[in-house]
Image (cartoon, rainbow over all chains, first blue to last red):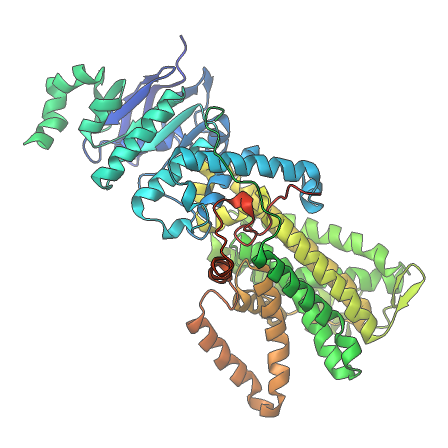
Length: 255
Length: 354
């Protein structure tokens, strides 16, 4: 079985600092792969390398067997690797619906003539996209918010809207950067339900998360980073008892 | 998303608010169309015509500044390119005005590419400096080139002829620009409601996040700049025969600034706002002519107050959102889905009928 997304000895240096060293991970079909680790372990940098925001210093990123290392972020997104951001990046002055429609950018008609004369074909394609955007919003439980400005939504709803924006693109892999960080326990339940449903649809999920309970609950694989290195990886229950992990991460968390 | 089908109510055809809004737009357009009938005063007509011209330019710049969020301080350059291309081709080569629009557009697009390609990667403030420079370059070229008539410019530009109709009077040009404003406004609305418009807004709001949507931000910024250039150049091509003479003084930094002001006062990205802003910028100083020397001062103070009171412009996008909701609730209707007819949320929503 070829991995959907894999990295091969990926390293990233900023000046003399090794942000990531020698990371090789494999995300298989249908995985819900969690990446955990203390602050500054390099989790977000790793995501940025995967999605074209950073160019790795050495090593390779492969998506469905093809090398995508160093591709532009927009190209990576076009391939079907979609992400959310740690500090939520919504388009605040656009409506919730338009934010989601923007996620479906590549599926919308770009024929300028059709747009200018508002041709039947253009209207039909926009209508389909609107339906799908509403379906995505429904999926994350935000359909009634479609007409509000994204900037006016409370934090937890923005997080879910980001998910809807990712989903409308029918991505192959979804990368979630701390989906449950900073949300209330009610919202956390909601988010974990949505993530599980995304995974159930057959979409590969890679997720950075600090919430260990959430990770243990829903992840199929776990990779633990510390100081830009992998210190453990495997099944959640195995990782949980790994002494290195306990020392580096969970030990501190559990005091 | 095949397994998830949202249940959406079908679009209702009668909606009090939509009727009200359509009525208002028709009334506005008819009123504007009757201006030359209402007054024979050439001064008023002249001001009205200038206002229309500024609306066209502001609609063009709105794509660059309002939609894509790139501050362009040299927009008058594209206006000049259109005007000069038409001026030169019609006086020296005896082209018809209509035929000279296309080469003007072509030159404007090529210039937009040359300037835009290396510079649009820059963030907004650097871009403002570069476009400012471009505006100055075009004006300097116009002043110094023999072909452009130097500082005196080009005069005796022939009248615009459409078929067998020769447009000569102020009234005639009022209507030519009246149509142009409507065409530009519809074009802008259509763009806004398509993936182009959405991509531009995403870039304006958060360029990095826009990339995550699969939007090739460099391309889309260039498109915005080019569309702006096209609209600016067409306006220039029709401006030349309307005034019959053009000179470099009309295409300087102050003109660029006026266009930026129209967009900012009206409301970035809002088509109604931008048109209204252009009218305000053109008409306000004329109304206050009685203040004589102080009128620009009064205008300046009014601008400052406006920007403090309404920082997003007079009619920003979604300005009527609250009003729409109130009218609807009065009428006992609530909008539950974008497909049930809330056209003001998105500028244009694809409709099922027709």
